[in-house]
Image 1 (cartoon, rainbow, N blue to C red):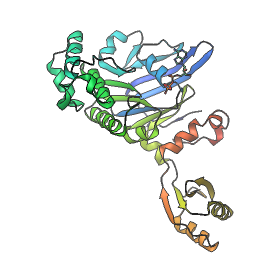
Image 2: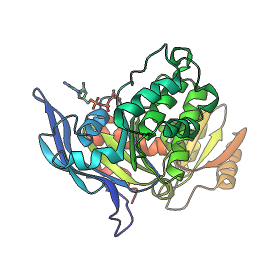
Image 3: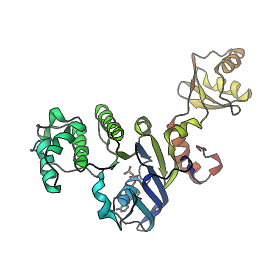
Image 4: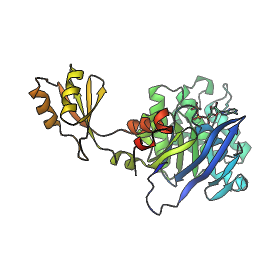
Length: 324
Ligand SMILES: Nc1ncnc2c1ncn2[C@@H]1O[C@H](COP(=O)(O)OP(=O)(O)OP(=O)(O)O)[C@@H](O)[C@H]1O
């Protein structure tokens, strides 16, 4: 059972993978994975470590052969028609290798020559990723974030329509992460489709227009980002120094209550969102006084955790969150 929330009639996919199965030894790493990436925007492929993100991406790029299933990249079947489409796709799957004693620009010049791209394109791509000012420094002196941006610049040389990045912010500091995020946003705004994998929710939440959540080798939820959060009812976060007593009172009053840092989280009694004033009144009657109450929207994090938390995911399908 999956939760797919693409708009009716959506059909313009940059990536369309159906029923992908991959086994390593006796182990099934992909278990019938269906992945749709709409043309345009940033699409996040979000999943815990080991869920099959890299394997899926490698299959999309024809680097690994699936045991079953089909892949279409920009409308072409992969791997059969790969030569016809690969020039329109840029990817970073592993750490790219550049020469440390050559400048960023020189590294790209060499690459441009080898793939038959004019060198003036090198200047353009360096500017596109914000490396204009550092282009003439040795690659070895770059921060990790700058190295990663140079790798992105390299993928842009051929003016791709689709970019695929596997965990591009791994190992970066917060500034590097922010820069990569901004770069991905800029590229998408310029009309390139960006598919980016990550196991870090907040990163995807901040940059992606749509998302596929992958767990144990399958896509368990997918759709435009707004769909995930819209369907979810808001909850009230209650900051209180006696959370156990507060939870008891609120449960008796009919709310669903969960522990939360510094207090409790109150979920809907019915389809309507819980009302902070009602909660405050109930607590006040029991001589319990919260230091704050805030109405919060469900975050992608909660949806993700519900969908990917081992036992729930496999066994208790009824408990899964509907996002459609
Ligand atoms: N070449 C291989 N041989 C054997 N097992 C593999 C191989 N490649 C991947 N695996 C296994 O397949 C599973 C999925 O790996 P994959 O790298 O696709 O996941 P991932 O979601 O990208 O995880 P991570 O974020 O940790 O990279 C893992 O258990 C991994 O150990």
